[in-house]
Picture (cartoon, rainbow, N blue to C red):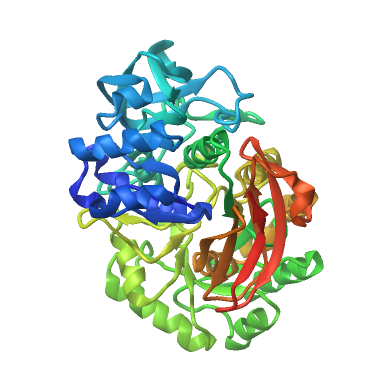
Length: 570
């Protein structure tokens, strides 16, 4: 049994220009750790037999034969999740599309339902459809908060025959991609009307491209307006909740590989930009981190840098050396050009003697849309940290969420092999109050993401308040269950967990799961969402509440190419 993603040839099957982003559903579900299989159109009838839940990733142009097969599947007890529209399956979803949405927000009244319990406020959406409801129940609705206007249902559930159908009328995948990647940066962005986000400073940078709304998508923390709601995390979570809930309603069990090892609730990352490359400031910061026993990522700016032996000390003590690409300073080899990125990368690798796996741009310089990701990909840099705020009112989640993500090249619709790990603030107790950092840790824990804070060595060494904030946020994170990792640890773990594969097995009418991995994965954490069997029956270590449902928790070490059998699920 698997989560079926239909169709495999999605590039040819979208119903409108917006739904071309449906291809991103494979990335969302891969990161979710669910057993996903893309369904072949030519063998749809056979493939549906082993499908626990069928997911339509966007508004699709389905043939009459495909519609009939899907209707038969749901009527006989299957579970269906649709995104972006009904794809012509009006009877199954119990509603019909009656117009299009270009930009709106989705909100809910009931936060106790398993489907909607993770929503902390109105979710900004780009693309989707208006709905006219016939038989479906409504859990969410379209709204325009600025004008206090509602525009009908946006999230529905419907009983069809012996099966269930869940519909998210928002074009979820287009929404996630547009918020994460932003708009292409060629000119200054539009500043916030309250003066808190003056991004129009003559420097092209990441937050010139944000698409979220300063008035609606921000909230005030300790007197500071920030993007405090991880909107793309919550859209991703809605898809996961819909998938698990639909399977649960049908009595079907599904496994999930949790985001982090040993059931860790979330991860913290501290990074440092070496602006000025002052050795005394670096030594001050390193001593503090050693006392805190906290690994961190040091982003080194060209030219100059530190003494070669300092990089080896960092490496040997578990810190990461990364690049701080400078395309802002008026110096040789510091223009926005791929050759200058390559030259700076080679410089740092030469003086450090280390392979550099990640980068954050000086002053978060950015041009275009995904051009820079492609440069990094060509140079073999595995991860980037540049997506974040430069102005006080842009802190938090200006690009939507706390989870790492792979970007989508929008012309060829291919995934770029560079993992983006956004950061949320610069110096706490300097640029932002400590309470902002604590609120962002809370959100990372609530959504199992990454709380990523930037501290410059030069500022930490000069400001006792900032130094105290570093200590305080590390301690607060630990109190909340975070583990502090380097950027390279995060990207390495994410890539290794993507190599885990589930295969359903059957024995005496019981269904189990064979799990195998191409990479070593110590303390891999599995959640078994099983509506049928008493949790004590399968030898699970514990039970937990996740995504509004109860799951059995199993922690195990996975060795390369050595399959293991998860505890039984009925």
